[in-house]
Length: 320
Ligand SMILES: Nc1ncnc2c1ncn2[C@@H]1O[C@H](COP(=O)(O)OP(=O)(O)OP(=O)(O)O)[C@@H](O)[C@H]1O
Image (cartoon, rainbow, N blue to C red):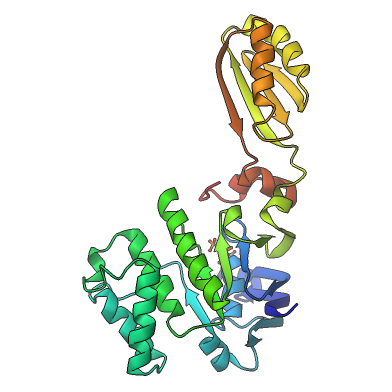
């Protein structure tokens, strides 16, 4: 399969001597054309450095990077073949949406007719057409983020780099943003590389820790082997913990039962499927409940498994 992005043995040290910081210690991965690929890791893991090397903004000490073309030998052509959306906004807040896309088209040397057609198409696809005549500083945060992505796509890049595209957006805005990014990139066959704190935003991901790739796979593969979801049962009466343990232990698909006071923890193999049986078993045994919660494996669980330490111990600014 053709690879739109290839990183091989990337090493990068910032600074010299005692102050030197080793940001990357041999990062490598390949991204098939037309897919959405994620770099996941805590702050300082090396995600931005990897992205900056692939977008020609930083030169590696060693290793090779290809974003459509070789970054070292053809940086100018790479810049024309890619779009890059940094974490910080890059649109002009004093200009309208239409003026922003027009300016971007001029920067890339597009013709007037093409700027008009492509600008209309992108404003429409991102749901920004109605607001296009308004000054962008009056737009909502979600609309502004979409405009940044539309600007990066103006010159029809083959590869799009997104640095934490949905950080700071509420779940609804995140979902909307992804529906629109996927719609546009799938229609144009664009390959997407993003840095993210959300497993489900990519088709495949690498987990980076301290400048190294520690795991690679689909979100499901990375979550796999985590012994299912966690159930927590709050008993109305802690004195019934043994009866509760026996009742829950008799339910198929439930394991790793531990009881701590009025709280019973267990793992279930198959999402919510064993829950009705678990509730029925407790009721039959006459054990009254205060509450029951079911939690999917969190980003922290995934990270702990692959990097050997908790995401939160490595990084405090994270969402699961
Ligand atoms: N210009 C620089 N000079 C010195 N050290 C740097 C520089 N840029 C990054 N670093 C260091 O390199 C390491 C990797 O940083 P990088 O920004 O690539 O991580 P990251 O995973 O992208 O983190 P974040 O999620 O915070 O963006 C960190 O220890 C960081 O402090």
